[in-house]
Amino acid sequence: MTGEALSPSERAAARLEAAAAGLPPLRAGQESLNEEICDRLIDLAAAHAAVARPAGDEGGHDAAAPSVEACVCRAVEDDVVTTLSRTGTRLDGGPSLEDTHREVTRIVTRLAEPDHYDAVCALLRAGLGDRPDGRAAGAWDIADEALRGLVSVRAEWAGADPACTVAGGWVLVDRVARVRLTAALLAQARARGGNDAGHVVNAARRYAWNWLRLPPPEAATAVHVRRTGELAAWIGAFTAGGPATEGGAG
Image 1 (cartoon, rainbow, N blue to C red):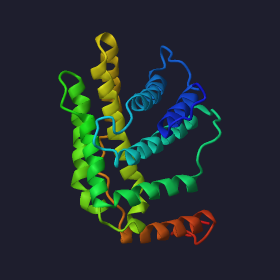
Image 2 (cartoon, rainbow, N blue to C red; image 1 turned 180 degrees about the vertical axis):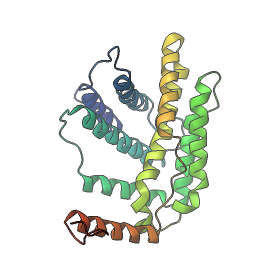
Image 3 (cartoon, rainbow, N blue to C red; image 1 turned 90 degrees about the vertical axis):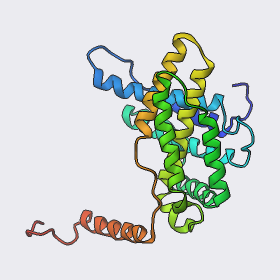
């Protein structure tokens, strides 16, 4: 860089690239390890594609763009942690768990505004564009289904009390991000030609397959929050050598 301030998405991509630098090279006869390495490299490629095509580039979505970018940065940071856990690479400067939760709370609180939730979904739809031809259609179909899932659970998040829904906000933030990152790879494939475009399409297909085949993100309920507290207390007592389990073990 030239010393200019990095945008949040650029900082996120830079952190993922630094983490990916610790990945070992692909080697013959280590297919299982090679698959893991390839997945991490595809996460890096998606981050770079999102930096090259920031949220809001489609026009008319200025209000939603910061929320989508924040979701993308959160997902990329999670990918950094995943990469580090696989390689043992040390990378300082990441947010703490408390900082991360505050950021997720901020995003989900904003998404609780119905108009803003709709604007984010509209931005994702604009970014995904029309269904492409050929192999790229496979990635588009998965992303399209994930986006329709976001619309289907709108009533759980939009207009709900963020004090409760933020408990499950991680899944919403991740889903918004992964749809956007898949769309960024597909847009990159459309902009390129030849073999290079084919490789980007394959990356988009694997990225969508890895991240977007889960059910629509459900919001937490008051009952869920209560049970979380109960489970945490039970696990804490169990790990601290609390009440013995049935059978008299202890």
